[in-house]
Image (cartoon, rainbow over all chains, first blue to last red; front, side, top):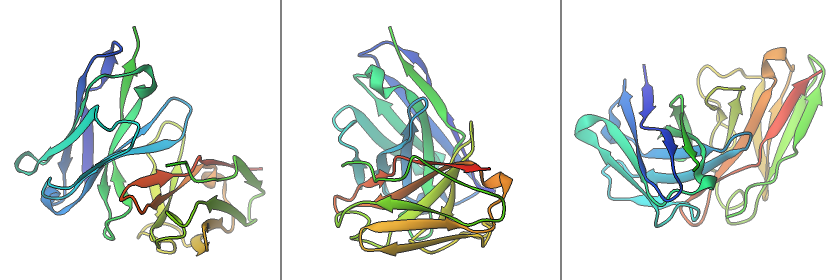
Length: 119
Length: 110
């Protein structure tokens, strides 16, 4: 069965950095676009980035552009999010998600990982 | 990119039908048939209920249906059940090759 497991979250000071990982299993990872989506405490969902199946296509939300970098290692079935210059407003649960068959929806989600930015 | 507009809350009695609207612009909802809907129970990851406006993934009850007219998409839940009580989010692909979510709607089963 499809599984996505995020790791790497935690508490970080403003201006700091973190690298999130998402380990995929149960499907051919290299066939799918992958996404990062976050949810601030008590708030709604926010799409933040996606990466094409080969890694050459990448898009970011304006809120993270220039600070976050998405990448993937198809040999390791893993997705990454390098987060730099973190701000208090980046505090959220971060989900990795897989692109569905049509390629423009999110058909499987990880359990989410909490990132807290606070001094 | 502004969030898509959804009602903050919708409620109904068991067995009734409810509809949640999702309003965007011609740059997102109105521009593509790429609207999807997600159900989220407290403390859980979201689950896709409808994709590409009207398509239902296998395993999702046929009580859930989607439609779109112009810049507004809708999710209808018929035969409302207690387990349907959750937050619901719409999402759309955009002309900027990005995605946007709705603000979310809390569904309450009375």
